[in-house]
Image (cartoon, rainbow, N blue to C red):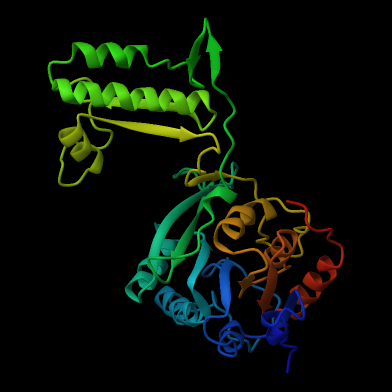
Length: 353
């Protein structure tokens, strides 16, 4: 039987292990609610042949794509069991054309997982910035999906760890404080004073709130803001107070602010990251670039927590976990890839991010 070593990872006796074996069988041996974060990219259906024994039960080799969806759903049931209550799953899947038809495979899997109780928090579009063109009657493929799933509504999310620092700072011009984009508040002040849609009490409250925002800009707590005033600007998403909290605030208060803190903003759900990796080298056809793994691990795995990849290949997820001061577990059916991952791990210098 292959070396397991998960118990030593859980007890912090070791910081990583690679297991060569069937992913479902190995997951079934892991205790309940012991893994903080799973980041993985299963073999895509009917796309590649992997270097494993011919009699192996390889996900992705099913004759019917519906069986592929079922097999992944069963496997991720085990992932859900071993995740901590506040844990996360990040699932990367590419699509597939079959008989000239795009199958929508990532969403077939995602919807199946949701039917089993997973909560989908984000659909990240991984823009690989270049792609192949094997057909002349459709556009090039340049993106894949990365789904962020959680098992409960309250989950670990260290948003400050992944914020993008502002590129511009507030400044003072002619003795007047300006936001990072040059907003002084003067226009808003004029709109408040001239408004026919605000009561005198609402005008006073709006001016006081604007003063407080500008003071936060001066104190370095905010870098930018926008103000929406009843009768001057519309609510951002909808004017329907039944579906929009902003519209409700505009109706009851007369104004609201959109603020950008000095600690920056969260990344968007489009990630432009080239797929190349120094460990691609034709040894593995679907290597995770380490850059792709940084935000999922930083945001959803606590320091010294455990990150697991049940389809670890050459070990990118475990490598990134170690570099980010987390523990890592990799599982793969291929002995060849598992040995490559073990060689790779010896060459890293951590932490790097």
